[in-house]
Image 1: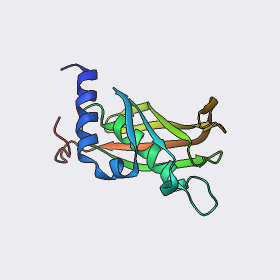
Image 2: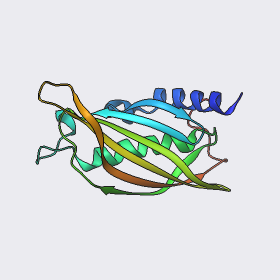
Image 3: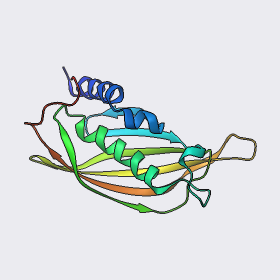
Image 4: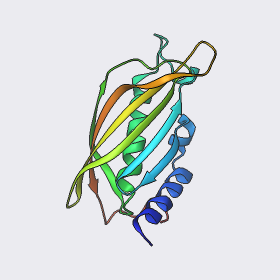
Length: 153
């Protein structure tokens, strides 16, 4: 099995077994070795009292892309930490996309950067031109080869 086939199998298995991701409305859009893209349409369930997307959902979307990316090599990997910078508000109806990329991998430790963008919904209900960066996330991973694999690969 090549690296892309491994990543595809990991993505399918994680999508099937991770109820939290599914229940939040997060979708896996693309996966490959050391990278992943997830998406979420902001609904009323994702909006806080200010009428904007709750920061916890932005973190969750970025963390999901990070999780797919760092497990894409087929080795059980968990988060060792993560930080996020919120740059702009996301709004009801926006299509959010989180794109994770592996920036460093050394031994069992990895660093992944995730950019979250929002495609704004125009007055006619269609996406406006261009996507805006709404958040930047950095995740630190740790491969745990002795951890029983949570997903069948």
